[in-house]
Length: 76
Image 1 (cartoon, rainbow, N blue to C red):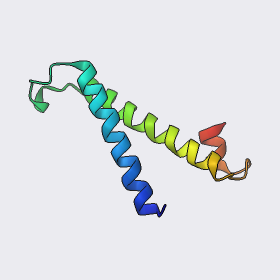
Image 2: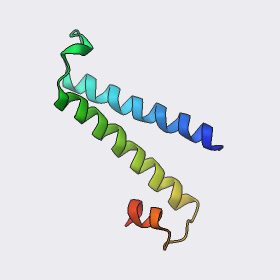
Image 3: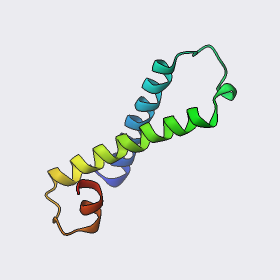
Image 4: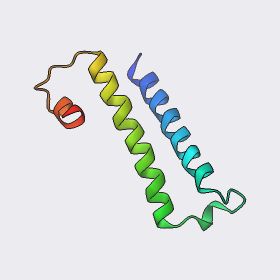
């Protein structure tokens, strides 16, 4: 997978996580402007968490060196 394809894949996965959070939150009939800062932060946390999981799995599959700082950060 090229870097651009990976970015698109991860972006879609993050968007799906945001969608899941919005559906679980309810109140879908309300406009986006009614979202609070806490709501936006929760969506960001879900999207970032999904990225971390996906990137960690990708690094694990690619057998990155264990002493790599990125691997240490994500898998440590």
